[in-house]
Length: 81
Length: 288
Image (cartoon, rainbow over all chains, first blue to last red; front, side):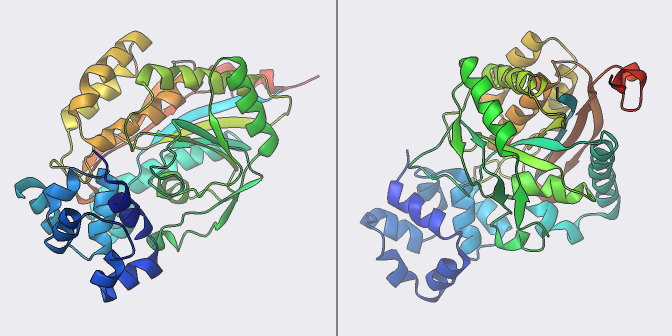
C-alpha cells in the first residue's frame, strides 16, 4: 500500500532546505500535506512499522535520515516495532 | 561503425561515501582496487561513450510516474543531487544525444518501449562507481534508468533481453565511437525493510556463478531467488543489461566482498568486448 501524501512528504524532505524547515517546526510542516490523522500520529510517535506499510522502503529510510534518527535505532524499530 | 568496447558491473551504496572513513582498512583497500581496476579497463579500452544502467533512488521520478526503463537522451545531465555527494566534481555530465536517440529508435524497432528524458539527475547509483573508478577523463555518459526501487519491476528476463537491444544499438551506430556498458547496483542488500543491513553472501556467490551458466539457468535462478532476497538485490537487473550487452558471454568476476559497514554485498565484474586477437591495438582494428 502507498499513502501518496505521506510518501510525497518523505520525497520532498530530500531537499535540505525543506528538511531544515521540518526539523525546526515539525507540526507546521505536517500541516502542508493532507495527511490522515493516523499518519500524523504515527509520524509523531516514530511508528516505523505503521509508516513502513504505507510507503516505499527507500523513502522511509530517507525520511528517518532527514528526521535525524540513527541507523541502529531505525533498524531496531524496523525489526521490533 | 561504432565498436562495442566492453561491459562492466559495480555495486553502489550511499555509505561508500558517507561511511567510507569508518570502514576497516582492508575492506577499503579491496573496494578501491576493484573500482580502480574497472576504471583502468574502461580507460584502456579507449571508451568514448559509457551507457550506465542504474536505478533512480527517488531523484527524478516519484509515485506520479515511475517508468520501467528511461533513456537519457539529453546533451547533458545533472550530477548527483544528494547533499552528501556535493564533493563529486562533475556537476553536469555530458551525454550523447544522437547515440541515445539511436538507442531509443533501435529499441522501438525491436518492440521495446523506453520512456525518454532530456535531462536526468544522475544520483549516487550512477556517480559513486564513476567517482570511485577515478577516471581521468569521463566518457560521455548515456544513462538508462531501470526501475528496481518501486514495484512492480520489469522482469529479469526482459532486462537481459534489453541488454541485447543495447548491443544492437551499439553495433548499428553510424559513429566511430567506442561504446561500453556499465550496470550498477546489487548484489544483496536490504534497505528500509525488516532485514535492513542483512547481506546474503551465499546468494551473491550463487548469483555470480550463474553469470557463467546459460541465460535460461541465470534467469530461472534469479526468478526463484529475488522475491525472497533483500530489496536492493533487485538491482541485479542492471548487471543483466551488461550481460545481455556482452552477448551473454565473457563474464569475469573482478572481486566480491560483503561489506557490513555499507550494508551491501559488493560485487565487481567485467565482460570482455572481443576475443584477445581483436583487442584494441590488434590487427582487426586497422581500418582501410
